[in-house]
Amino acid sequence: MNRRLSFSVQNLFVLMVLAGVFTNVMAHTVLEVPQVTELKKMTNNIVIGHGCQGEAVIGTSVVFPDGESSTITVGNDPHSGVLTDFVQNWGNLFQLLQNRSVFSEQDEKLDAAGNVVGFWSGGGRGVAANLNAYVPFTISAAILEPTSCATSIRFAVAIVDVCKITTIGDFTDDAVSLWTPAVGSKYDGAPGGHAYDSPAFFTINRDIEANPLPENCGGVGVEVFVKPSAAQVDRDMPIIFNGAQVWPQP
Image 1 (cartoon, rainbow, N blue to C red):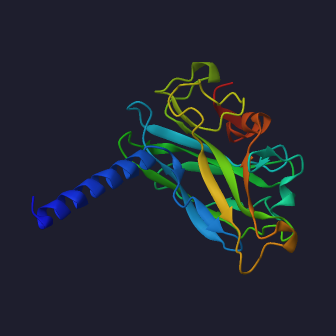
Image 2 (cartoon, one colour):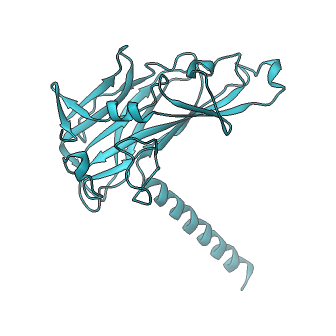
């Protein structure tokens, strides 16, 4: 095989591998931009990757960790403190952008303090099972705690794509796609099932120049991981429309 042909074959192989990786990523429902540097505001999208076993997506429900009841680990070690040990202004960083190009209705989800902890979109024509779609939202500038050693904070985001309106007990792979962390909630799905423990992720990275690590870190940072609690997912995942729960069916 001559060098030119060998090079072409190598390039084709690389493109095939990259295409496979891209297809695998897009098969999941994810955040279009999975990370941001602190102190920067951004516009982002929930990317719906596909339908439910050939069924169209008629709605989606999103829950971000509230930082109050969340599980926090530093490296591999549980953290007994609070999220504000690492990020100063986590509450109310998200805002849904109105967009009716995919779904006809949408709204934000608020906690008791009025912070946005998630949102939902649904109704209208929805998303064909073989297509992708964007649900846009904004993220305000996060401020990492200067006294912490955190170089990044990674958040597990719970998302459910809804294809049929059912009770939780009637969830099947053609009714919902559960892109949620396995935290013991009613929306975990079954171990070994489709997408089990496959949430979307969002990471906030420290701006080392603007916010350098304090001296007591010894020049070594830590990675922080945050997951919503089961209680929060169960509380915030349902879709409430005009004061009534429309999904899942009570």
